[in-house]
Length: 76
Image (cartoon, rainbow, N blue to C red; front, side):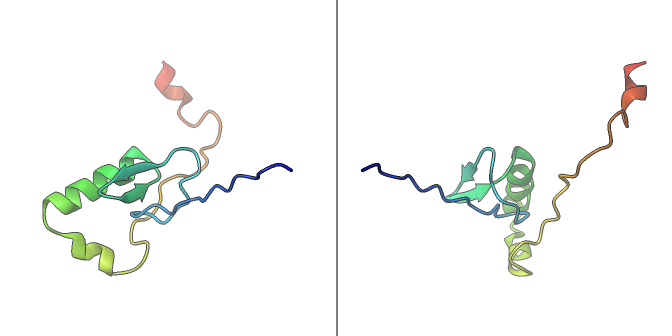
């Protein structure tokens, strides 16, 4: 008999994306990346957390697949 482990995927408090690769916690809130955590910290530091009452995932994720070679010109 083998025990099967269960893994719960949390949802990012800021953007609503699944925290699949690494989960970052701040004030018991999960974040999918350092960027979302930083935006939350800025909003919280300035007393603007009512922003999160707008909807359950007010931040828009910027994680998109970038075509290969898009930034190749920066190598020059």
